Length: 222
Image 1 (cartoon, rainbow, N blue to C red):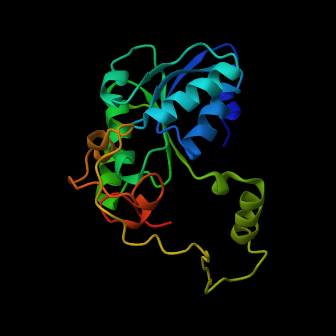
Image 2: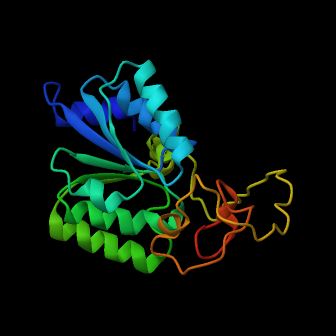
């Protein structure tokens, strides 16, 4: 899956207005992909870190993109009828909630994996997609790669015989994140909106931007 291939689905002459929620790291990559897709335009960027909004604004300016509407509250941005698609690259706990809100607002959705923080939320998202009948694409890029498709075809065609057992593993030499310290919320961060639908917690200096993965209320592991 690429932004360019998504553009071809809707037709080469259609201009697709894209909003991005969560524009750091993976979100930045998606923003630039859609900005360069040819028939897509980044019209809205939502992030709760004001530094990220400034960075993305500079990147879009460098690409000579029209000025996007910037903000930290996705609820306000979804009210804009000009947005066609919402791209979601937030922490995991926002994925299902933002996707459902976008569907309710009449937008199509591209959401990074996992599509939900837990199976129950995933079922709610499936029900919302069926109710509002808009496209929802989850970003499982590896599943869409040619080599993976060819391997799955070989398995399904019986070329590898009968497979009875599969070993899989994941290894990473990432060091401990430590215990962190309770500190005041940085002035550049809207901590309330960062937490969104999750239970409220005091801020710690180890949460943002990546280590939220290791906490039950926000992440699902690596």
